[in-house]
Length: 328
Figure 1 (cartoon, rainbow, N blue to C red):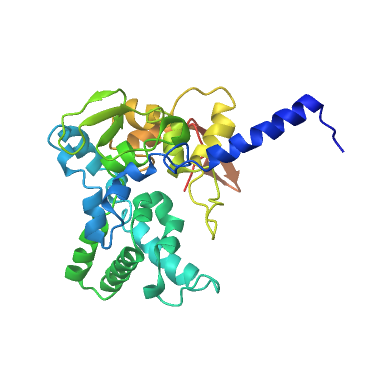
Figure 2: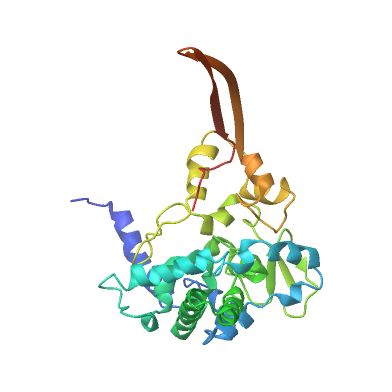
């Protein structure tokens, strides 16, 4: 048993009422999550439909001043993060059919049972703002996904196109990156607030809805991208999932070996793509990521009375990216 000196025992005893006094203070003074109630979702309330969720994070007002940036973003997969090239949408359907419905404790026996918590296994990265919506939105998204896939299979292009428009309205846009997800260490820097956008400096912002500009400590750092582009399994979910692990391999191999570049350096600045952040789909990115060399030597072998020409091809590939390839 540890016996404390008298003076320390007395100090601890005298301090205890003070600790209890402070812990009983109003929620606004020193409580966890100070400022959390000032965010976009907290101010507007949870979205009840896809249309409401789209309106909650509507960034169309950004186009007037940032037209070129918006145009670049519109070419990226971020602009259609739920639909993707169609493969993402199909994967979400498979997640429901071959995952949720098959897992006995998920509570999902058919698509109409899907709730927000179910879709978050994918939406954690593909649509993080879904957490700011009610279950009715998750059901609307799921219904659109299944209608879209059925229409593709039944060769009903008009129905497929209609559902595709709805699915593409959900995305990772300006306000998701420059407001909702712009602060990773919220106890140190505060929670993102409605009326503020986060960038490279503090100051006024010429916008009626977002008149304040705040400097984000992480917007230009790899950790910002790591929120979605992964360390590995998302163990905090009731049903852990693993998809992207680029950020993990970036930290544990590239950075550990002395690499200095951030994700933004390769995928935005050096590539010249800006907000049209691409990876393997862009020929320039693919060329920068992998060194590909061939050494071909021709030989002729005698086959009985004939010479048979043959070729020996040696191929070497070197990963020059700051993370493992492939990823996701």
